[in-house]
Length: 90
Image 1 (cartoon, rainbow, N blue to C red):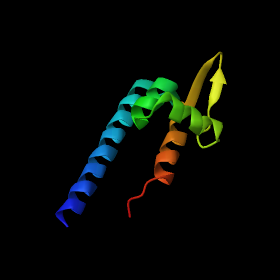
Image 2: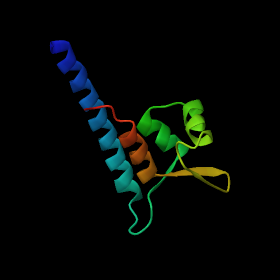
Image 3: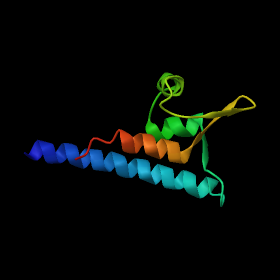
Image 4: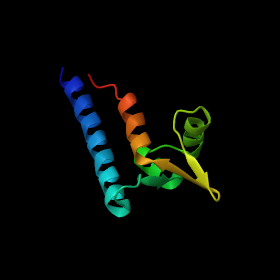
């Protein structure tokens, strides 16, 4: 039983850390009325994933994106939705 509580505590710590990262990005990019757009490097940092994983999420349609002048942008709301959809806490 103690092991289960420890694992759940670690998951909560990970979620809290991700929320703190998202809040930092929000503060840096906050523009009223416009979607908050993230670059590839920011998404990889928040989700702690590699280039190849992010490329797979794009190519299989799991994560929508826009490409403008060679730079790929992701909506923060799409990142949040992806995390929410894959959250396994019950």
